[in-house]
Image (tube, rainbow, N blue to C red; front, top):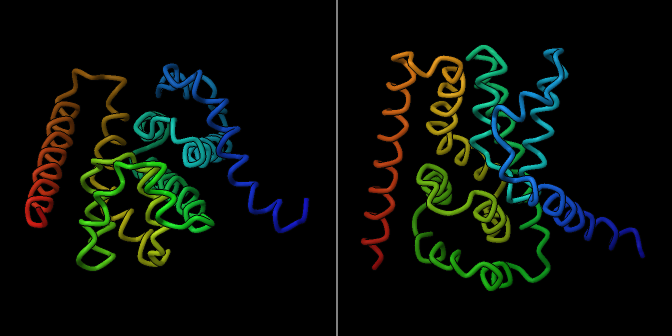
Length: 215
């Protein structure tokens, strides 16, 4: 196999290998299970969690919320937010790069994942707002969205900042929920839970309004 072909098929191979490894174990991938396998040394723990974020970006099956909650359990709140944001950057970037490398282009991605077809109708304003809205609402699987946006040719310099900004409310809420898991009777736990629910309801309402405008 030529070197160019090797590097083209390497992401696909990693995607299939990650899925084969994680899919049978997906029900056991909880924040508590992650903690059991996390190294004790802080730097090693950070690198371990970031490696799991990267694996999530290649697998499409790893629950993102479990990683964010694990970060909240493992580190002080400020550190946990920083690690989780870096991790989500990895998770968003890897499937985006896979999408950019699609030889069949956007049509091939939509044929394999028909539910992504709605995104063609939604993409009417600026790319920044389009990506921000998708990440804020979270109505479609994040990894599939990343794959689509990469294949759609949205510049990475627009894609990543808009994606992180849209995902930030969810990242912050789940990180805080994770930090309160050790004492779920704490009033802050319920306040954070309510705030996360409010963001979800607002996001879904925004998504419905957006779809009704183009119907």
